[in-house]
Length: 291
Length: 235
Ligand SMILES: Nc1ncnc2c1ncn2[C@@H]1O[C@H](COP(=O)(O)OP(=O)(O)O)[C@@H](O)[C@H]1O
Ligand SMILES: [Mg+2]
Image (tube, rainbow over all chains, first blue to last red; front, top):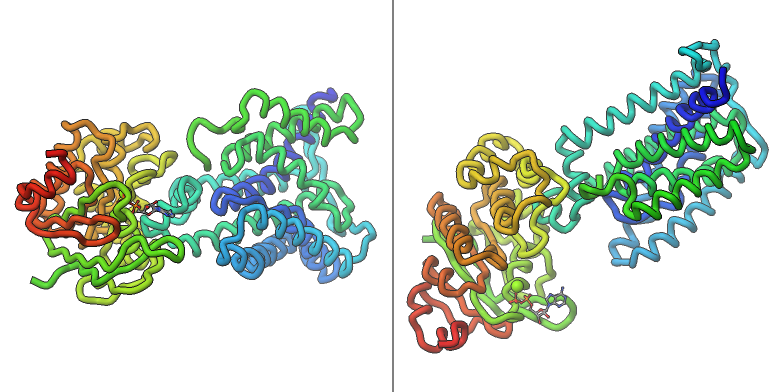
């Protein structure tokens, strides 16, 4: 198998992990209009919850992933209600909210470390049989990750395009004041955005942990930059852009890692980001409004 | 006849100092009421206050006889009030149809029926149904904004300068629509700069100056008065 195709194979897996994470971050941004810098820790929390369910409680890894994602969704809802909303009620400027989420990020990372310890962990699940698809080789576990991403991205698409709450999310992303005036219950839609964002973060954290095999409490924060790159390349606040950004960043970083040192993946992601921003400062998906 | 909307001695503003001072207005079903006044008089502020977007220092708002003072917009929409702001009144990335659907968020039961009614009133919108609202002309946007507000089937419709920036021909078209909306039973409250058309077409008019209710009367009568003509029309 050529290096290129091998890179494309890895790229598809990374893109799947990245798509889940990026769409979760960008959905929340689209609705609330500020970046959650603690989002990386949401992934970490998802990964450790699944570790608890699968390795300590001995549940199936995919069932553990689902439980972890649901709990992360609940946690995300709680963060919005307990941490973010009090600041919004006092009409805190956006800069303050950014500082708050950065603080939360440090707090959560240290919290996870205090509970789970700083050492490497690994899920007990096996990576499954080897499957050949054309010239590319995947494990069944990797194929499940790709399938999860495809199902969830389709789900997000259907949600945004065809459901009442999905359209309400897009309306808030366009103009929150007008959404409120039109009768959209912005508080409930904001809650929902945080829940979906947390759910996707939880899933992403688990599949990321599976993908990198062993992980520590910095799992999510180390991945956050790549998530940002995908989100910004696609145009921040635009879920379809994030999907495309994830595919682009995933493929290019993994293919390049076949030819140059894989330690440069982040540098490559940064290079793509810079190049895209030079030519399209609004991101690739920008002709129509956000989302 | 009992007014559908009655605003009593409202005082409100953005910070601590009042902009609207002790203003009272009333509007009946199936009629158009216009609020005119110089720039900065507080007309937009008054509409925003009625619609629950600003905190009220004192005074009361009654909708269909019920006290709705200080109620947030989404609950007012559910109870039969609609509001179209002057600027940024459509969702640019949503299609025309989706804009209308958002208008029906609080009252989702009869969405398709009401959409047909809006399309009947504004055939232009039907043609542009699938287009993003951001690609519409200024006049079409104002039509869509009105259509969006009508999707919740409100008893009272508040319109802030629906003809601002439109050509005289389009202004006439918009006012024909406003009159027709009143004819189907709505109470329409319009803030307007185009005083002549507005007062001619309205049953009742209020003159707001420096946040205070300076005058009121039947629209055409106000228009005929020399002092009002001098204030707005440079006669
Ligand atoms: N968002 C705002 N914050 C503070 N003051 C405002 C705001 N909007 C309007 N004002 C002030 O309120 C007064 C009335 O404005 P407005 O209601 O928009 O007048 P009109 O609609 O009659 O032209 C003006 O003096 C304006 O400067
Ligand atoms: Mg105004």
